[in-house]
Image (cartoon, rainbow, N blue to C red; front, side):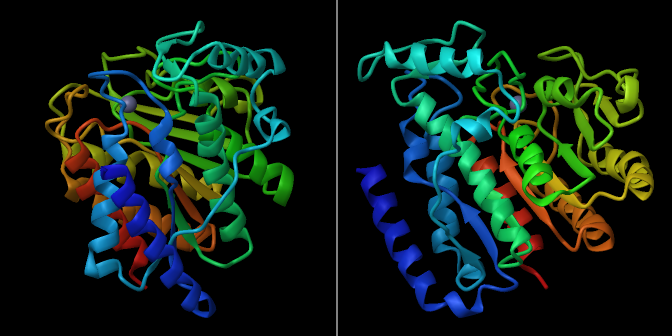
Length: 343
Ligand SMILES: [Zn+2]
């Protein structure tokens, strides 16, 4: 019933947008599909469809966003797009293992701690497709920024291994797509999920064209992300990790951005900003033990908006990673969108 209601609300929101098509400029795209709810992780799993339902419902009824958000339609990523990052073998493995499942059954992906169901491969490809749609709209100047509200998350997935609730590394594929399709030379990935994005770091560790910045809890899953990990070879100096002890709050988060990231971007000068936006560092999360508030995420969005204005013509795409208390995701996404939609 809840799913049906969401579909109906979304239907009206999408149709209203048609009337406003001529005035898309200065709007922000929210890239979401009800199909993201089909990735079934079983009973009592923290990464479940409820995470998206309340955030989308609240955005649709929020009068603040009545005329400022658009809700585009989009397609799953192609095999060629997945292969920008992932090995053929790994993609085949995901395809095969999900195809063995019957409706309503779940199992673990053989590479790690990610629950999969029959629809998971399709939904994971759609999550990547959401990011690709966002950057296509931004590069064609229809909009300057977007928020992709996707499941499953992606930043723990390496080129050959899904883990930590992730199947495909959504943001890494989008970064490579931006380079291949649009010839961009310098992409910044900012990751403020409570967990270190080991997959994203691993993929770009020897790469000087993608700068990876992560602020996360330590010690914590997946244990990587120490400040001593700075990249290697050509990528040396293009990975920047700030780890925070449990209990750290907004001041620590904002200081990491002001003191560490701002300095790095003045040298790197990113042409596009991608954000791995996890909200499991919010106070009261089921998994994380940091104490950020929605206001902390707003502060971060303001800093990123300034960087984007200065270096990347405003071009910014946020993609949802973790966050396991639906209200916390909802409030935080609201704050970020209030920053993005303000002229
Ligand atoms: Zn996380």
